[in-house]
Image (cartoon, rainbow, N blue to C red; front, side, top):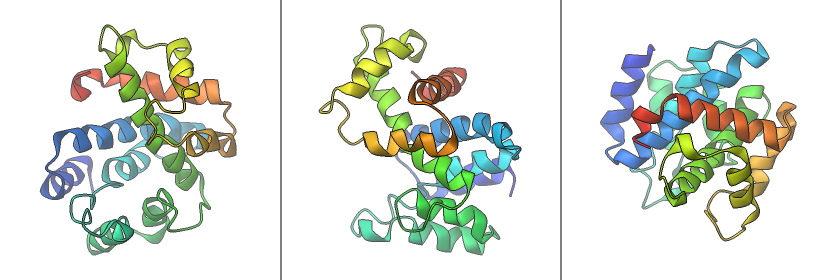
Length: 181
């Protein structure tokens, strides 16, 4: 599946604009991480783009989140290595590959970064820096849904927290126009 087809699939199932932006943020971060591991940026990006494909379909049954997405993606021809990352991002499969670990860490990190940008006086990703982001990271009640342990799992990829936050922020800043932030 190419990027355009993946976007069309996402927009078929995800109507919420903010959820689409979250998927775009995860796509950008994973695309930028892929070369670090000798992987294909487009493949990793598609995992980020499609990881929450079923959120709206499963909102009444959140325990089915990712399971429904994997069923849809299986019909589209995605293999088990790819779909395992979708399951692993919400603890429904073991994190075995670098893609699994990367998506797991990137998912809440993008949420923390968006929340940080929205509370910044300039309300802009470009205004956020590592110092500002780390202060927000340490505030446990700030963006409480952005699981700090999950973000800190970036160490399983060989990154320190500062580097991982900086890299994810830079990826999101690169597409700030698409994120409208």
